[in-house]
Length: 297
Length: 305
Image 1 (cartoon, rainbow over the protein chains, first blue to last red):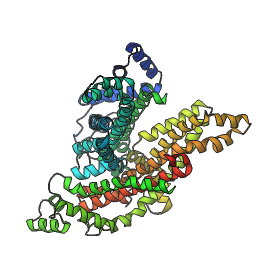
Image 2: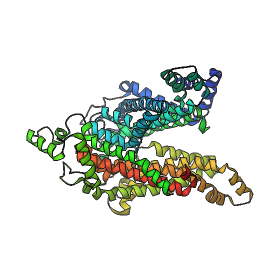
Image 3: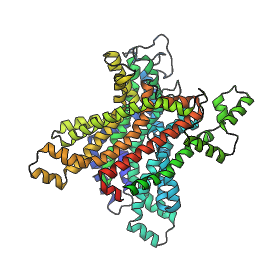
Image 4: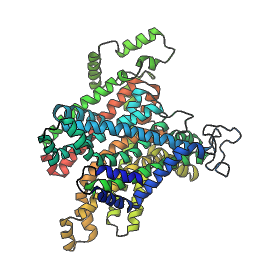
């Protein structure tokens, strides 16, 4: 719950109104939504799993036991074992580390680069605006996972390149949002006043404008983690991301496809993990949108 | 209408230029020598020189780009390294497969998404609304490469009702439904919120107060007005269906463009990769333009902007 408290506080930093009261009101509105609370709980659970994976996992994620191949779920192996005798539960737990890491790094790349580009485009206008936004238009000509796929085609397959590809592919969304918010903030009196007082543009852009365009960006980034995890797992499913024997959920599902007839559990649990964590970020994003984005209220 | 059309075409020019530039520069942006990557470790120096000359990579960059462009305009996307076939023919051979999948998925997504969204908006039972919106949340959170596997497991292996893969309508059912689910979920959410907004407006209250039956008001008055934002999302969803076909074709082993693209990337066959990037980018641009024009027809106010 502390995480939500800080976000709402951060967003209200520049508001003149009593900050404490507004923050608490926003938090109360957030807590009234069962979906948002459920999302936060799910994400917190996955973060704990990711941190404690080596302690929680009953077996080594890559340890192959040839005497226990494709064992169905039972007391020895809660989620069964795969075609190489590896414990599926241990691999799913370790997979949380990879997916959360990929999601956060990819969104980090997209959010910082995109917001900066959008802020500059909106702020500087003219030629800068045209060049930046036309470049974003070209990137948006490749919907969904296609741009990430094209970037992987350039960089070559691999987990690290997948993170970069998914991150770069998401830049335009943040750039567009940041630009639109910047343009609306620039019209406000306090910015005009700052200009009249002779503040230099970097000061206006980063001290006056940036803190006031963060709310929609935070909402986008939360849902963005969900999308990034889905895209990266998809690329790994296609064989372009994490390579064997990495315990990555998408790659595990790709392996499972050949054993659907004999080992249904191989295809069930990694997918369930992806769905839960993605749902968690989607729910949290919906909740934050209600609290932070005044237009949707 | 004509000026509207011309303005949209003109706005697309820089994007078309950018897409061609991106497709062209892919092999130059790759770390290392693309010719070495394509030929593999054991290639001799002569092989490398020959392929470089064959691909025109020994000429100055602007000349290479102009050659690429003029060839592409004439429908020549180069020759595949792996198969030795013209890339444009490899693409046209597979486009039917992907078009059928994407088209079927689009139809399912619109039908399912709009009707579920409408039910959720007009339903007086909060339980029904919660169930529908819960399904929508599942739809946007389930990866297609998982739902596809679950469908294969249930309908093909356990129940034996449908084939995993195959030609014709029956073989298309599972992949199309798999591909359609996320788009249907997004459309259901959009239809619901858009319809709820319209239902609060004065003209709906007027229609109701005149004694017009509830369902007639919803279908004839409200849905029509709620449809414009839904159409926007549907247009955008076409793009995500196109992108999603890459994964769904792999799950169901269908020989379409998506599978072709993945194999091209795995083999690092740059003529194939560049060809498909160019093709996909341009198709999506055309679709977006058609959607834009449709708005102009549906809502004359948009033309004025």
